[in-house]
Length: 67
Image (tube, rainbow, N blue to C red):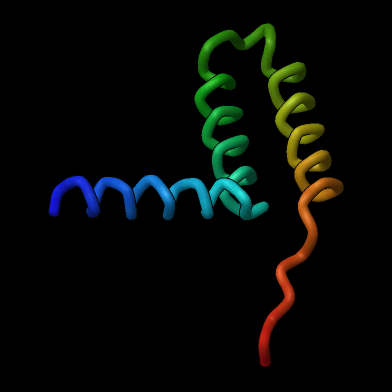
């Protein structure tokens, strides 16, 4: 039973990695965490995070709604 639950969670996670919003969230969290690391790097971190979000928008297609 535990094995099937873990397998389901892994598959769910992998499916979520195919969603653009998941990557946006990961980039946003990483960018926010990085901003507090070094004030001198704030501009570079924000620029990198913004570029990553732009890349995510360019690579992942929009989800089509059924209705």
